[in-house]
Length: 526
Image (cartoon, rainbow, N blue to C red; front, side):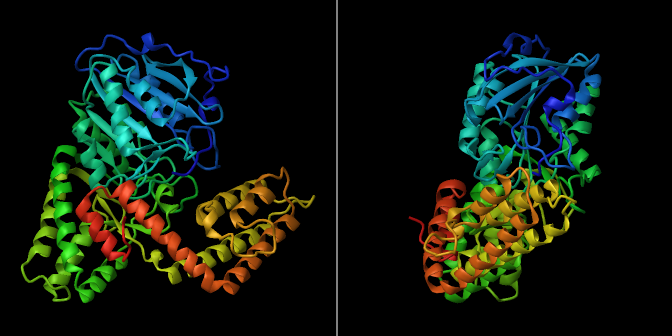
C-alpha cells in the first residue's frame, strides 16, 4: 500500500518518548468482557502508520481514533498496536468507553513475536477479531522494512501462540489487509485459527481496507459472529472507492473477499488435482505452448513489492485461468482425451464458489482468488529488454524533474522524493539488476545505489544533480547494450534461481502445482 501523510504522533495523543523501554500495561487490556462483547485487535505495521510519509493519504490510526466516540455506551473495544520503525518499538492503545488510552510501548521482538505478544493480551472472554495491516503476498507479510517480516506459516504459528496465552484457540475473524494474499494456500492455512478470512487477490492501494465505517457499525450494532463482521468490512469496501494518494481512478481495494477457510481446504486439494492434470497435459510440446499462451494472455492481477523483487513470477486470477483452460479444450486447442483436465478445472471453480462467502471487484476478470505462474520474464531476452526499458523510463522521469526548480536552483524535494520512491519500485533495489560484470563509467554498479547516494543523501538537490543521474542512466543503457550477450547468460542463471526459490520455498507448497509451474516455465526446481 502507498504510504500516508500522518502518523500516530499527529493525533495529539501523548506517545511514550523512552528509547525502547517496556511500559506496556497488560492489566488494562484484560477487562472482564461478556461472551457477546467484541474486541477488535488491529496491528498496524506498514508505512501507513509506522513513521514514513507521502503526501496525499491519511492515517489508519487517525481513523480508528475517530471511532472512540462510537464506543461510548458500548461494551466493545479496540486494541491497536503500531510498529514504530523509527524507534524499532511497538506502541499500544485501547479505544473504548468513548476515549483513546495509551497502553505504553515495548521493544519490537520481530513481526511474529510482536503478534504473539499482542494477541496474548486479548481479554479471556468475548468475541475476538484480528486485523493485520502490512505489505504482503502469498509468501508472507512485512512492515515497511522487509527485515520486519513473517512468513504465512510463522504468522499462523504466532497467532496460535498468542491465542493460547490469552486462553483461546480461535478467532471470530482475521483480515489480512495486504496485497496479493487471497491465495488457496494462504486461505486454507488460516483454517487453523479462524473460519472467516478477509483477503485481496491483487494490490491494495493507499489505505487498504475500509475499517472506519465497518468497525463503527460493529460498535453500534454488535455483529452476531465473525462472518457478519467480515461481511460488514466487504460491504464497506464495496460502497466506497477511496482514491486518495494520487492513484487516479484506482480504488484502495479493487477487489476483496470474505472466505470460509474450512471450505478453502477442499479448494486447495482441487488446485493440487488441477496441477497434476496440467503436468500431464504439457508433456505434449504443442499443449505446453498453448497453456503458456493462455497464462500470459490473462491480465496480471498485480505484483506486490513482496513478489516484485523476484521479477520472474506473475499472479493470475484462478477462475479466469480455469475458464481459459476449459474453453481451450472445448475449442480443440488443448488435447484432453480422457476429460481429466476439463474436469479438474471445473472442480476448482466449484470449490472456489463454496469457499467465497462474499466477493466484489471494481475491475473485470478478478474473481477473488489468485494463483502463481511463471512469468515470461524468465526468458532472458524479455528480461533484458525489460531492464533496459526500466532504466530508460527512470532516466526520463529524473530529467523531467528539471522543471521543478526554485529561484535558488534547488529542485522541489516533494517531487524528487516521489520520483526516487517510484524509481526504487521500478528497479527493485536489486544488486543483480545492473550486474557487477558490466563496466559502467562510475564506481557505482547499480542505478538504484546512485539514486540513494546522489539524491536521497543530499539535503538540497540541484538541477545538475538530476542531469548527472540522467547521464549515468544513459551510460548504463549503453553498457548494457555493449555487453548484451554476457548479461543475458548471467541473467538467465539468476532468473532460474529466483523463480525456483520463489516457487518452491515461498509460495507453492502444493507439490502438484509446483511441478506443473516448473515444467511450464522450463525451469528445474531442485
